[in-house]
Image 1: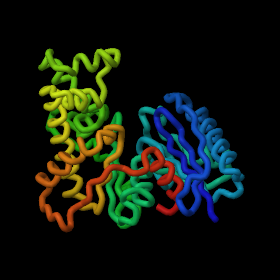
Image 2 (image 1 turned 90 degrees about the vertical axis):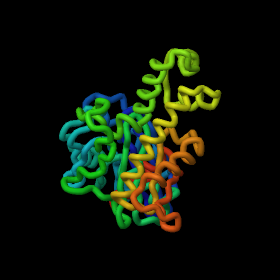
Image 3 (image 1 turned 180 degrees about the vertical axis):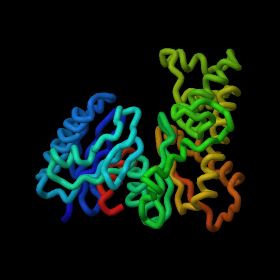
Image 4 (image 1 turned 45 degrees about the vertical axis):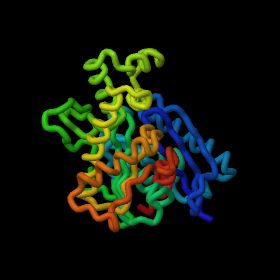
Length: 317
């Protein structure tokens, strides 16, 4: 039996898993990222989490084939360098060699969105599919592309930043510096922005009371909860969000024609309240809809484990 280490490096947490060749997670380790801070300090905590995972799996480093790391930001997969990851404070950081020097293992580096997509293609709802695109609706709009069973990285490993394709010309400002990006409308942050816009327009909306109960905090649930209580403004937010997201996903289908389009992130906890109308919008928006051969729009099956599993097998990607 072969064993691998998968590291899912996020802005909040470092999650590590020891994975066997049957894609079972045998041991886990977790540390806080506490970013931004010096890369060497983050690497020390990655190594600490690796030790925790190995101890739980009752394995030694000598039994591990390689280490795979999924990280936010632009990644040079050949050089093993994170070019830029704003939330980690990384700039031209040789992360693969830094971890390799501490562990004595070959380290494969990849973008976290690609790693999660690869994980879902290997062991999630898209298991066995050759062509898969995954989007993650979180603080940002993460994405990963698998074509013919391999992660697609493009020229200089920079492909896959779907969230920073423009959706509305000269629209909302995005963290990347552009305006009108998909991320600005379709991420959880985008949903919150739309919710706040509607709250200002409709001061009698129940969304104000719901936010007050959460300490004046607006979340991705606020509009959905208001809609369920019969609030028209909340229903308007949900409809606008689903229309924007459906348009973005239809664009992905038209460009890549994947067998599966996997949607992940906390917003997916809404289940069919989100997915059923979203499928209808996508069906209406795509260029050539054939119900017998259509892309399957599904929610992610693996949750946070997708990043660990996908990273663990980056050596085969």
